[in-house]
Length: 350
Ligand code: BGC
Image (tube, rainbow, N blue to C red):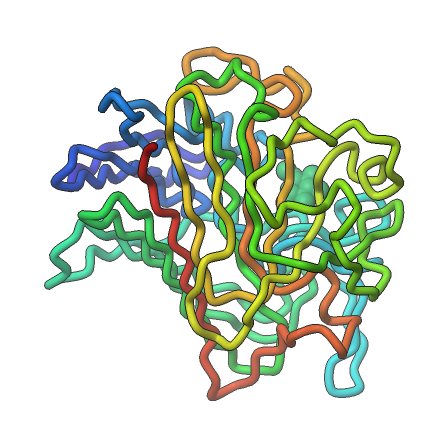
């Protein structure tokens, strides 16, 4: 485990980068600002080690950026309609930062704060634990939430993310990890040649503001059908209303077999490198976002400008706008209970 200074915030606090290296030579780098994965280096089918996540060259890029590169987002990952919801008969207004809606925790979400770091003892795989205390009222949310996120780089080339959260008042909690993946080895390659499979028969259609309508719609006979491995670019520009709303894919899929146990959620395959990323999770949903808002303005690592659809996110989560949808799997966290999530990004080749 290597620890280096990554930069300094305007209030003088230092931000550190931690480098996890496993026995296979794969590397994950994480900074305590936003609990952000800044690089993830894994082999292609010829053993060539390359970075597969988009990110920024310096701390300032993460501080100023709006793309959530590699961060943990929260308290609520994804959207809450109008930033309003009712809990135990009380209405809450959380910050509105995406048109009329709340997105990814608000103006200063978990991606824009400095976390505390602990190095777990006795873990055989390189691992880092980050902790953030979100005070009562932050961004409009009730209750003080303590969230711990542990990243582990296992000997099987898995980046494992374990979440544990508590609150002293009833609140909502739905954090997720927001890495933009591009398995090709070059961030100038669009992700449309990647092939994707999602363990899902249904998705949650949205309105023009990307808020679920409440319906669970079959993917069958639509461009949302990823039941078998399908090139992402095959249907992305089809004249299909849902794709127009997202300017591409930006939707939540209802994962099969939700029971709280970890199971496969998705597989991503990049034919030129042979890299495969299998995503496993205990969550009910998966947001597949095809990088439709990357516009070449944000300069990333090595000065590369991230053009349209050069990275994609697979965000394991509860469904968007659940606080306003009592029929969706709950995101309510009560005092005395513990929020838990485990998500695994497993890398292999073929
Ligand atoms: C959302 C997109 C949003 C992006 C921000 C994704 O998780 O689904 O709608 O634009 O995050 O980078």
